[in-house]
Amino acid sequence: MPDAARMKETVQAAIDSVSEDLRALSLDIHSHPELNYEEEHAHRILTEYLEQQGFEVERGAYGMATAFSARSGSGSPTIALLSEYDALPGIGHACGHNLIAISGVAAALGLKEALADGEGTVVLLGSPAEEGGGGKIEMIDAGAFEGIDAAMMLHPSPGDGAWMSMNAIQALKVEFFGRNAHAAALPWQGLNALDALVHAYNGIALLRQQMTPDSRVHGVITSGGEKPNIIPDYTAADFYVRAKDDAILDDLKQRVLACFEAAAMATGCRVETEWVGHAYSNLTSNDVMAEAYVDNMGRLGKALPSKQQSLAFGGASTDMGNVSHVVPSIHPTFGIHTREGNHTAGFTGAAATPEAHAETIVASKALAMTAVDLFTEPKLLTLAKDEFEAAHPAS
Ligand SMILES: [Zn+2]
Ligand SMILES: [Zn+2]
Image (cartoon, rainbow, N blue to C red; front, side, top):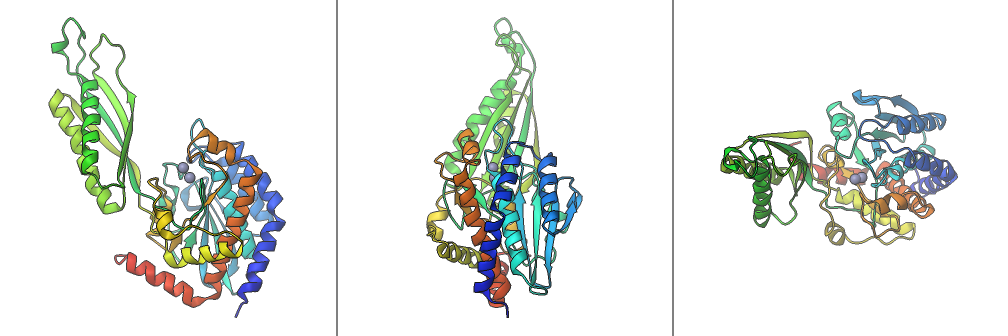
């Protein structure tokens, strides 16, 4: 039987020994921000490094040019770690995915050193396009999680937590088609596509009172007309619809669509709507694994907030949600010494600091130590799986 305490010491020493390498990778990715499915640079430097470190690397995995897998060890169980490395338009690594990239590498390297032959397998999955592309959903469909016993990843945030409330989401593209007219001389001859969009926007604002408290609907007008003296014959908008779980999301999506259809009817315009890309599922963090992570963070000197405190924050979404519906999963957050939220320029700056790197290293150790718990205590993995089966009876 492997010795968990010894393995956890090995994990920590191994991660410390590559901290400078990881810092260089992190800053390299941070200074080369790449959008959804365009993460060629990050994919290249991460896979080169993992290969140097002795992992069995598959580039362009699961039918995506910028996905990869890096495998080490043998036997069961098989634990997946996930890295992300995509950035946001205009504000670079404002979600700190450069830190997620190296956290997966750190935890995988620590486990590689700690696991003897036959004690288990670790697979690092490089997952593209978290910011709207749904790379992990493509990976699920391509079979990446078949044979995986549990999955885990980290995410930087303003605060620490083993749990996080993450909503189901789908994006909606809307277009209204009306008829031009001179806005002052003959306005009655027009069908005002901007009125239609404003009407729908207000309809959604009224709908908010009837939504569950954790639901979110938010949008931007991407085309609002050309000139004040022309009744707009075309307008367009992008909206996101989010809810606590997939069933509530399905219901809310229909109610949001009704706002657009009602606005079209009221203004005489025609509406076209399209649900864009993959729907992300809500995150269902595995309590057994999350509690083990809390315990391991405690061993590293960090007290984490309770489940209840952690779940009080949220509203955002992740394609790790879909993974959490396929295998027992956790997605803990770690604070990087900023009060600015994710998706701000302030967060981009914070994601490059030495303090953020130090926090990434600590959280990566705790994540790898949690995997050690699953590798060394078969009963714990059984409990995690039992909890997962109870929460996902259809799967
Ligand atoms: Zn983000
Ligand atoms: Zn993110």
